[in-house]
Image (cartoon, rainbow, N blue to C red; front, side):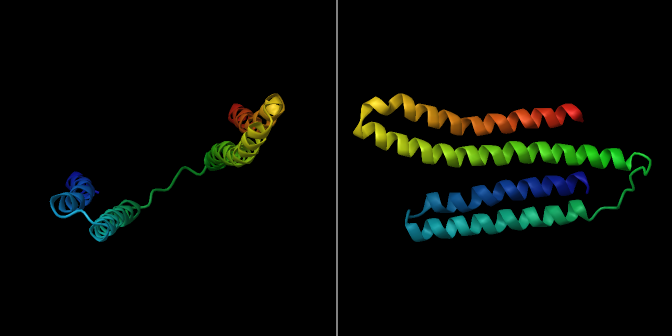
Length: 143
């Protein structure tokens, strides 16, 4: 993809944001007009994004060296594993903290003497994220 094509796509993405919201800000501000602005913005943005993706991925195929193919695959899968461990543990920890913290706030509002016990449960839920991060560091250490 040439430099001119890249600049055109950058300009298209910027204009896909500026033009619809400029149209919205100039006229009467209503919910219908705002929805239309968001729709036009999404259409142009994702349209330009799809065209750019097709042009970037449609280039000539380049063959990688076959001697180092296995090592590169295992390294790439290791990075994906580390990312998944961190991401999924943080999502699980977030769900656990949401449940534990809301229950803890309800319990504290009824009886303030359960503050210490409820903080322990919230801390245990946050520990899930830390365990995932530690495992992620262990995976990255093996690469």
